Length: 167
Image (cartoon, rainbow, N blue to C red; front, side):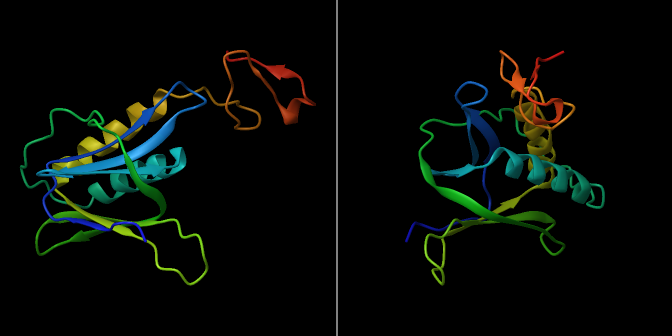
């Protein structure tokens, strides 16, 4: 079984991608002290987490915490495991956003690894902005089928296989 992580006061929480558009590998990453956790994720998991946090933050009071200055992935980006599920909550007692990630399991009944990151509101706000930035770095989306358009276009199933190029 892979390692689990519990970061009560991470000093870094971000998302990023490595590789060219169309071949990017996405990561969620957190660091607390000397512990650096890089978890492989799907593009849609990054997008969904950013969107959910954005909605949650509308109801969370600003605690005046300082905003992170750098949200780049930290080196070395070494995948601990791949994210399967994501849970998010807000702990009123400590005024923090709690993100819980569980890893993909290979066998039925097996318990996967988990990661728990307890974030300030400012870290969550910065993550939302970073997630949007990471999404903009990808390939454009076909307006007809919602598939990704490669630099040379793509054969859109909704246009009977005709090549759609980015407009």
